Image (cartoon, rainbow over all chains, first blue to last red; front, side, top):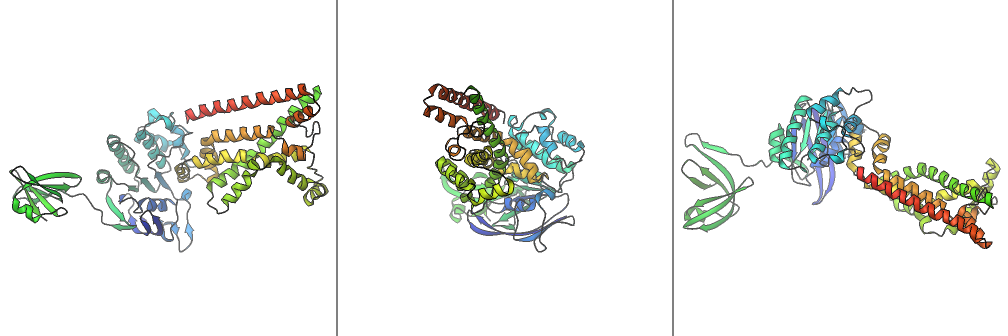
Length: 290
Length: 224
């Protein structure tokens, strides 16, 4: 288990704020951290890696103290056993794929792990290439494999897939998941992408102004009543307008906009910004104020 | 004079080679530290190192002359304790050239370090590698063009040095007489043929070495 308590003053674009996080991560857990930009996600990750120092707090990993400000203990990044994957890949341009991977080996560590990772991330065709000759997705596979060579206690992924297109992203998510399971890793993923989070993470937390808050999960589809066979979606009214003989309301559900035909009566009760539920069944669509 | 021609050119390139080699070991750590420091005195240090770029070489030479003179405290101490005379000697020229050519080594390498993304360094540290290992295996190999530029500029600049050497080295054949001094000397003696020989060698040298650097840099940039 990883016990984390961290406090650090930040100067975000929105002004000064304090990052204050208390968090336990279970061994083997896949935790996602989400939140708006400037909420402190990346700082949290850099504090865990040892790339930045907090004003106060501790990080204890399986009874090993990585950080204890009260006792003046600050393990440098080299001794923390973290794997880091950046959005920018950060492969060493002067080394081939194989050299990039072997660079991570500890003194005297067997090369077997490199071959195992080459297998998991399917890099065997690319081993003698230099990073400049690889696509973004290929580079990020190398970066992932390289971060795992030392079998880190904690894998830190900082928006690793946000520079890739959606098809490539889906493929890379599979590699991440396979590596997480095959090597029994504990993984922390910083991400904006809910599809990614749902696919990969066991648990998700959100950071808001430096503090942990409930994530704003996308609206979920609920079955209203098993008996009436309908399901409902909740959303927000964007716009009201006349549509032919009747009236229509545009509702934002998740990231999609749905137009629902309504009567004059329901229209009168609504204004943009209202929370509403849209009810569907086999025959009709209905809209009710939430 | 014929023997003097070869000797003078050899001395010129020997001075440049020794200076460049020493500057490589002095310049890389300075460039590395300057690229990394957040210190408030960084502009002061940068200004000090870059002074030879703007100062007339004779100013630098004048102060070195005063400092090295056996009548000064430093010069006297060197003669008394180690029997080293820096004035009108090859070692004095090397020290003068080190100071004079330092910015030409430091500046390209420093901007090379500064152009490397932080992630490379951080990735290397996260793989358990020390600052030293990261410098040797990741940072320096990825700024080879900058290091090469520093080497060539420092070498070429030392070959072309005149004012400092005139002040502290004089014109002793085989000891302090370098090509640029020899040209001046031959012209003074109205010996234009000999002056032209030195001058042509320097022109051809300058052109070839610059062409070589640009060719190599282009090739390196293509592979990275």
